[in-house]
Image (tube, rainbow, N blue to C red):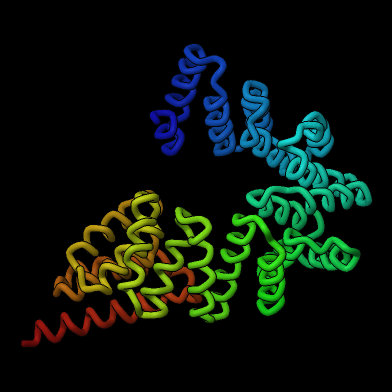
Length: 363
């Protein structure tokens, strides 16, 4: 924990000394080397970061987490030959090939070995576990960009690779490309083809996001509820559903259980705290809302929207000076971005408070 504090505050002398002491006490602990890699990332020392990640993997060679992180960083550093070398033994281990093949394929594309890369990408599409599909989508996009990846997937599906994975990835890429109708079509097809509950959950999760962007709020609600039925503790889906109920459907009573569950599972998440606090505010539980929203604005990276929501609560409570302070601080966070929807909302709120203050002083 102390290492994390020194890292966050960039106190490098203290961090390095504590890290050296910790390594002496626990020389075979891979967590230390992973944390050291975080520090080298902040300090922009890529060779040292890769060295630390390599040591973490050496100490825990069976860890998918350390392997994925090391390969990702090697790809980012354009060390494609090293990706091939490191991934080679894992291609023969039953629990690794699907997603390791995707990362290996990404390196092969950069080495202009497209035919071999495509073979690995196709193999991944047939075997990769549901929870690694996002990684596969990322590797495809990095290798061929979004439009190129869409073209590849359409070609492979037409050639007989008609799996839920292929349609899920195609739907995700269409969504990223803002082609919402095509995304919906592919994601519904993926859900229909999927047999595993987790695969259906992923399709519903992404469907919810696309429907929300299309302002199809009832379809979004159905998709998020279906996703939660398969994965009850998904904080992001629960938070998104709660915000949908409170902010868009004006049904905060339906939002409360989802918002409360998300806040219990992620008590330091600014977005989750904001949704819970805003839901309580809309239920007129203003004292509880203030407490939660104060937590939201006190996290390390608060959101401007939390300032707006807390200001709104203070305005309802008649605490005009406190409301003005929150609106002003929120506006400062978005001042440089007039296109942000909050820019106008916070500006209007501040002007409204000024008018209230003038009316009060004129009495």
